[in-house]
Image 1 (tube, one colour):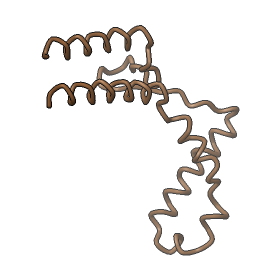
Image 2 (image 1 turned 180 degrees about the vertical axis):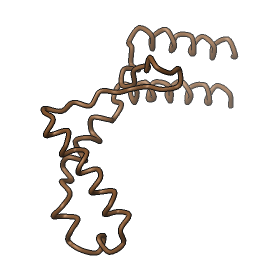
Image 3 (image 1 turned 45 degrees about the vertical axis):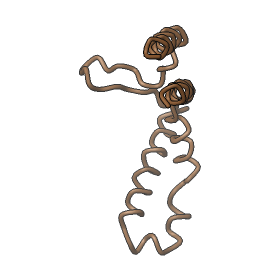
Length: 112
């Protein structure tokens, strides 16, 4: 039973290396414990707007008075924040997590 489980894990690790699903985070050369990721923007202006919207949203969420007014709709471009969130989602890694979850469920059924 244990050998079958180890075989599944070994097969999973080999397929993981072959498919290269860990591609969102790239190792940072300056430190062993840090990673970087790519954020696509069309211009410096778009980058500026993204950072500005993140800062405005943070300020509004920290300011109790601002949360209760229409300032939120007028000053923050929520679409920009959603675009950033979409770019940060690790799609390949989520597929890998599904594969790992399937192996876990199979091993859990075997262990019972």
